Image 1 (cartoon, rainbow, N blue to C red):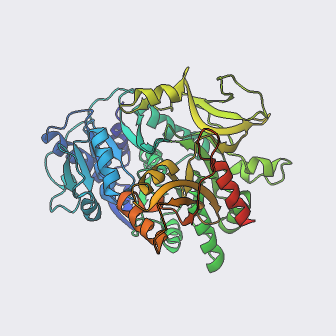
Image 2 (cartoon, one colour):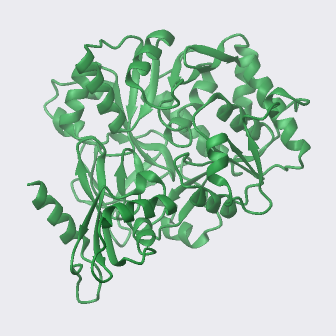
Image 3 (cartoon, rainbow, N blue to C red):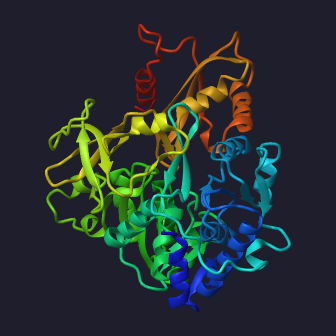
Length: 508
């Protein structure tokens, strides 16, 4: 089925209810929202875009983001939401790999893309005098789509440094939305979803059940996180929830403590996307109240592997509360969860191994990458690359990541990608990038650099500027350490474990 049917149904049931808001201002009722999507779809089809063609979104959180996304679905197209913090070169690569026929941008991102738009991809600036959702004849009905068709390409970094396009289908999106309603919280018409986090990622996934149920999706005026604005919006819209990386949760809690804020109108803050330390969780609960729930998922199984619901976190009297709170919860009801060894054999409770999941929420595969798909989905199981263990009650505790992924501020960063960028600089002979714990960002990156010859003055500043030319700002190392050589094993492989141990010793 086409996800746009959810919008059409809500428009019929709740035509006058707020659907999209910018700050405290309602910019579209459900009648308006569906009309904007239908008009956008008519405009897109008039430009010879056929069902299955890709439309990319490269802009900040704003109401036009939602109009373009749902208009593309109404027309039977596939959306490619891109992290708005990507460098224009990185975004251009995604446009080429996905074969996008159109990219929707705002002024800042139009400038970032200059010189990086592949041939055959048109650019639509939302600042145009007459945007598609304001012009043209509407497409009366959403285009029919099958459950197994592509609907959303989610690009997530791979261990080789090149992003992989996770192919999500209408079935995947529906399972994700229904899991939220079943295990995170039920929703009523008029409930609000705040979007301080990017719509291109988890926040975008979690706006779906609100469209299903006639809720209002609220984009802050700031376009991101401003703690004072967040609490004001929750108080205004009432029964307001959001998805947030632990970094955002910690900032909200700090603001509440420093300013004596007693959150009003807050329903649920769903945290995920990075580890949440138990001490931070306890502090956040004290500052924000009984409004926290956790999910564990990844782009390949969007937002839907395990859940740690509010009632479990609130059960402080339970003898295993601390253990449960430090976990990522239990399997969602629409998936199977298994811990497996290197040979793919299921392991008993308590034994560590790779976290594997299967169910209708698991991706169809990686876009145009059959080899990566075959390596990740084996015998129907998605191998997540995360290492964890299940206890005898089914609670999953994550122990490590089998890949070198670093999660900084809720953003996934693969060191290989950063290393490849740094090695382009003539002053760098060798480099290894590792993550280190950070109280604010969860993790930050440290680059160990073997210089080519004598290191130039202000090497860190030179490399920082170099990174800005090649990768997204958030992927830059925070610290550069100049070394004579990198530790290696007999086969010449860099021993990153030793580098992490050095960082731990520095912290100690």
